[in-house]
Each structure stands twice: as C-alpha cells, then as structure tokens.
Length: 364
Image (cartoon, rainbow, N blue to C red; front, side, top):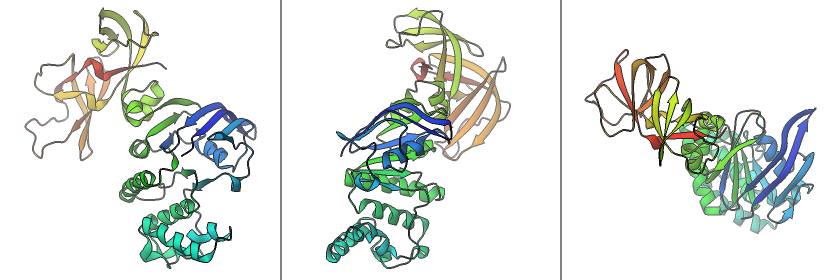
C-alpha cells in the first residue's frame, strides 16, 4: 500500500517534450485514474513508473524508496497492457504461472497460488484452455491474474478495456473495483474515457494536451467543481459561459452574460481572483437545468428559448435550446416516466431554470 511520488519529472522523445517538470502524488492502496486526451502523456508517465522508459530529469519514489533508475524486475510494479500481451503458445495456467516459474518458485507452491488466483478471477473452469479459446473478458482476467500473482505493490493498467465492447467493458469495470477493494493494492489506471475514470477511481488526475495536470480530486470533486474550462469540457458535458461579475448580496453575485443577460450565482468565498467587474468563465452542467413549456417557481434563474435539436439517449434526452439572441444552451432531462405529461418537440418555446449554486466559476 505504498504511495507513488513523482517529483519534477520531464521526458522528451526526438526533441518533442511530452512531460515537463510534472509532480504528482498517488496515494497508496487507492484506485487512481490518469484521465486525459490522446497524446497528453498518460502512458509515458505510466511507463516511467514501470521502468520501461527512463526520465530525462526528476525523481520517482515508491513509498520512501527512490526507483527512478531502478531496473524493472526490482520494482514490485506490474503492468496490464491494452492488448494483454498473453503468451499464445501457453494455456491459462502456464500464462499465470510464468512469473513464478522464472523465479524458480517450487512447483507445489506455484500450483497452489495459481489455482487460488484463478478461483479469485472466476477462471477455474478455463485453467487448461488455450488463450484463443477465451473470450475478451476472460483474456483480460488472465492478464490481471498474471500481473497480480507476484503480489506487486502497484498495478499499472494502460487502457486495459479498450478492446472490449461497451457491455463487457461496464461489467469489467465493476470487477476491477471489486478486485482492488479485495487486494488493497495501489491501482493506477490510464484512460481517455471519462466514464471509465469516473466509475473506477477513488481519486483522479486530469491531464491536458500539454502534459500538464489540470486538476486532482475525487470523481465527484472533479465533475461537480471543475477548476478550468478544459476540465469542465473534458469530464462530462457542460455549458461554458462567459460573463462579468457584479456584487449583489453577501452570498450571491449577479453575472451579466452574453446570451443569458443578468443572472445569479453563489458568491465564491475562496476564489479571491473573482472580483467585482471582473470577467469570468463558468460551467453549467446540462443536467442541472430544468426545462418546461410551463412556468415553474422556486428557481434562482430563468430564461426562454426555442428547441433546436432533440437527441434521445434512453435514460435521458438531450436538448439544444436557441435563446432569443442566438446563444445555445444544452439541457439533459432524465427520462423518468414511460408517458410524460409534458412532451417537448422541435420548435417548441420552452422555459429554462437553474439554481445559482449549480453555476461553477472556473479559475482557468
């Protein structure tokens, strides 16, 4: 359950900087996700921790022990790759036993450990099957078993579910959560898929296109309170608004926003950069907006517009609303009833409502 500490690490390939002076602490015994777009340096950082690449500068620690220049086989860190890298000429038992056999562990101990591990992974019925006889989910569990059998202090997962279909991916995410909870091993999960990261992580770091960390926090902190326009747009969907702050009351600001006019937001006590008359960017999640053709009460903010598009997602419906001055606002409505009393259609004029605390001011 050791933590991982990255201190001012830089890495470049063929003159192109991938990571520059990056610092990060990954807490021990937690499920930690590295989320970012392709090319943000997530996999490079993972490979530096594993020892597959060497840092140009900076230091990496596993607990109190520096591992920056330590050989791969001494690091007690194992990796599960996107394509699993299983040995096709070996059966399931032999694949999982491989790491123990090259360490010359006695055969009876190998058999005991492998059988127990395969039972944990619910693979005991596939123990002597060849790899090409397994489904994608079973192959993924074999790769996990092979990585865990050596009892690593850290398990690195590099987009391990990318090759699976959506239904199986959702199932395997639950299995990974349960596995980490059982083992209490530090998991570091690299993905560009926000759904995966929000589902599995205890904590997560969001990396931008320049290989910089934009925000670190729990999934709820990152989603509900993004600190930058990049995070707000990359993690989930949002409406990014630009406006000018005007002091109004002790706990509220009035914001004049192009497209929305004057509306109310909760005064950000801790954000000293937000000053009267200052320009700010804000995030308003589409699901925080109520939509109705009739008038509603009890909301801090209200505007009107015309329904421009409707996209049905099953559990929710996405609307794009064109306001009177051609500003567009996105709204998600939960589909709670089979036959709703109010049906919203194209070109309907609708009311939009939201509470002031659901508008988040963005620092960057």
